[in-house]
Length: 420
Image (cartoon, rainbow, N blue to C red):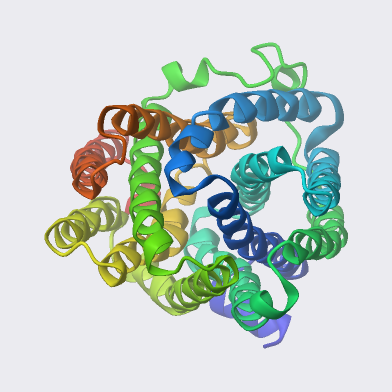
């Protein structure tokens, strides 16, 4: 498709086509790297420490995220958005190389460090890409392009899942830690190109001086929309955590071989990403164009309520995997694309600073808190009953649905034009 035709179909302003493509390619390499490292790190951790230790390591995630987000805010204030993104990629590549060398040497704690880092790097980097997207697109462009942009990222994950499923048993799980570092390298080039072509969004004079802090946390009190988003992200990721833990609990006994389990997880995520890509390239643009966003904000959590009920009454690997897959497909595509539109009319600090706190820090803090709750349950019961995971997920889904209604009421009061 030519740039002219693409622009005409999406009403894109001249000069944005190539930067948007560069962002899509950058996200494809980033999400592709996560497609390799997520199954590899999870399988290595289960093999080294056992699935019952997963809730414990998750409790350390908020501490790592707090430090990472603070460093991000400092870097953003000092060197700006483009250089902060490039530095984040370089640090990520270096950490994966360090983990690979130490795991090969038999370092058990490097496995735990790898698991912790894979939880943090992806959200910090992906939100930086969305901060740029929300700064260069308007609402009408975002409705047409947010789905395909996310879909471009999914293509990298699909390829990663395919390669994992095909080669995990022959190459060995540890080799994919090294491959992850290599996959991130082309992302450096496309990230630099995207910023150079689109321009580095500039804050106001007050924001440039970071007068209200490197993270500008007061925005969460000043803007009720941002506070509601904190709750939604926290609840949705708590749901994702218990669905993951429940699936891993079943998977550990269903597939005890480490490389076979890695291959299964690679195939699982490949399938999830293929279905998410179909939604992102086809379903999401159609829904954002023809359906009011309020139905997305309320409908997605209600769908998760249904899936949690199904898992509660039929606790099999197939249903556990299906529940997690449905959550990820809808979260990667429709809900993400609809949520990002809310950031477009907001200030630079809301798009670059508050967004990291909401969509990266809150995301992983929620995982950590949920892991802590499940750790306490593990202390009480020795092995956490599967029904506890599912019941907790059902509660999160119901509360998320309630916040969806609150989000719709708030946007009606403020007459947000993008919700029509």
